[in-house]
Image (cartoon, rainbow, N blue to C red):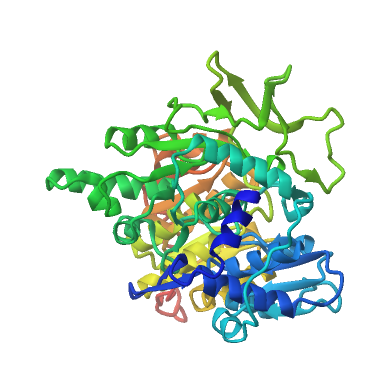
Length: 577
């Protein structure tokens, strides 16, 4: 953390050095300097002078206000509890259970209003609005950091996307993590860091945002809701030095690179507005075929592996040491071993503090993934696919897939069942809103999750495009017809019954997506037998089985019932369905 604080002490009053650049939907750019952001953080910190605060929640979107909130808590030495993107009311309540106050920007205030009938915040917990313009106008003076380097829990984060547990991130662990990353990367690698994953995600909380500040650099925020297909146009304008790559982002870059080559234009200039390629980095979600295709186009992507329990990265491929098909070598502050059952075990200075009851007694962080380490020290992960769990935030790559499909199909009728991964209906509805047409119907058997989803949709202004039904399998037979796109995001044993219930509402060409490892053997046998579907697995996130309906609904083959003859028999009328 010293590298970050050194830069902040040096440049806090620099009015010419940009800290956050925000691109609006109309393409205009607003630049916020170090002086503007840090003075706003000082003003926000003064408003939080409520006594001995211990933990403060952060409920912000991908905005400059999120950076202001982070820097305000850093100066106060107060533990921040950021709520991750796409979190439900239940998840937010668990993360904010013991906070003394909550900092919220406009998006956060809208979410709290939508959750008004749910007990998300502790009794009497104050909500402090974070408005950059108002804070800047009321700034009392320069930003100040205390001159002490004691260790303290600076953040509390979810232990994993699939867990309700929490971990405490230590300031010294963040410092060790940043020092190890910076030692492996070229100087100034994060001087202009393009934000393509949410600021509330682990990658930005303990890596990209502090790395950008440690380089005396700037965070580049894209237009809200930018689709992956528009990513190359945006990056060519903002000229990043570092860019996090997701599967949809990699696909978009590949397409733009092919066009540039065909037209005889230099690929780096066409994609990034620079003579060279920025540092392209990713987690393990980007498939190896996509990474290899990027490599062939002169776009090397550096894959790594990290988790909150180790304060971020465990291992990372770097410009100096990269091996395709691996997640790189362990960073210098990390100890890594393979356990007797093949599990990757992690130790060292980056370990977080477990705030649950599952702390390991042997001193190792048990990652729960199988791996091997080759003779040169590169880590090879062997991760079985799994289904999303209830309340788990939707991964960015799956979200982009759902949004892109709705946009490209201009789907009029979309039906989703179960909605296990929080955020799937949001992405579908965002696609319908962008098209200006379409209707999303989500069947969610759990009443609490149905209510959470309605609240999120209202807060995001997506409610007119989506209907959330507290309904089960038996209601799928009454879904709007014909269905253009069906999403099965449910327990493994429910995928085949859900598909069967929906088949009468499908048409030839209906696309069915089953997320993660939810499709079981019987489901795969049904969609892969070649009779009624054309199906294939997609290497996106934890995996997607994508199937295209080939035949008409079974009901279309049944003869219509004959009217009973007799003088009183009415003339049959169309059903109007």
